[in-house]
Image (tube, rainbow, N blue to C red; front, side):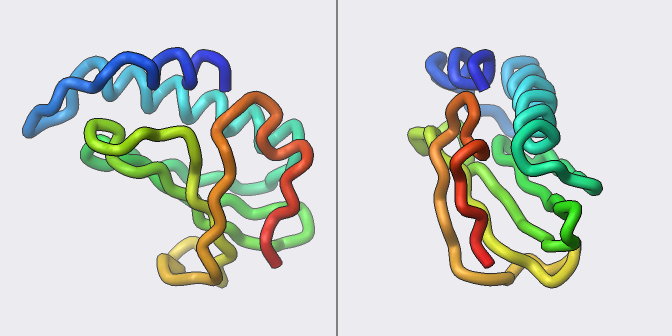
Length: 115
């Protein structure tokens, strides 16, 4: 998450369409998030969706638990945490109770994922 955190220190330009800065950030965040999950959580499925200055998705753990995750609009919110909650499937956007985890290196290493 080191590169992601460095990119978040620069304010994002607002636009009606995706900017190069946003596309580059989303690409780096996706790569680093997937690496964190693979190393610390051991996921067997991962979905990433890039929206209009926000991103979200799902992942499935080896024990078949499904989670929804999301980061808010990077133009207007101080982003240093990610929403995460349980889900029944990769289409369940309402899911369980909202939890927030700090975006940082090894963020999943000691994280007790919600049940």
